[in-house]
Picture 1: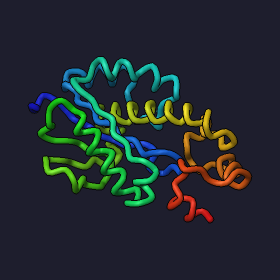
Picture 2 (picture 1 turned 90 degrees about the horizontal axis):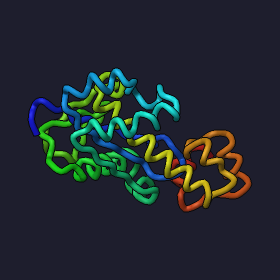
Picture 3 (picture 1 turned 60 degrees about the vertical axis):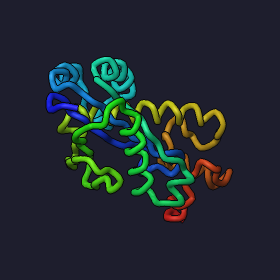
Picture 4 (picture 1 turned 90 degrees about the vertical axis):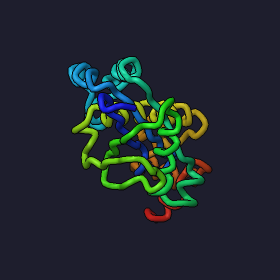
Length: 191
C-alpha cells in the first residue's frame, strides 16, 4: 500500500461485561478523508445510532478496503482483555486484501503481534478520519450483534446496554445469573 492512503484501526466493546470485543480497520484514500469529514464522520461515541447507521454505507463505499475482527468471551476470559483486543485487531488487519505499510491505532497500546509499522494516536478516533471510520464500523457491527443476541438472552436488556455493565444489566444477572456470553473475569471485579 502507498503513502496516499491512511489505515486506521479501532476497537469497541473493550469495557463490556457481555459479548465479544470487535475491532475494525479502514483503508482510506486521503482524498476521501475530506468527503467523510464533511458527511460527519467522527468518533462513534459522539454520534447517535441513526448517524452511525447513515454513515456506515458511505464509509464502506468510500473505503479502499476494510476488515472486522473479534475475540470471543472465552478468549477474553482466558487471555485478558488487552491480549484479546489485540487478537481482534490482528484478525481485522488480516482480512484486508493487501498488507498495509503502516497502521494508525487508536489509543496508546502497541500491537505486539504486528511486525509492520504502527503509530498510536491517543483519542485517534477524534483526530484521524480512518480511525473514526473504523470506530463507526466496529460499533455498528457489534451493536447489531448485541441486538440479535438479546433475542436469546432476555432479561439483561442487551438491546439497550449493548453488553455494558449498567444497573439494568446487573439486575438481570442478580435475577437470572450469568450466561456463557458474560465475561466471568469482568463480573468477578464487580462482586
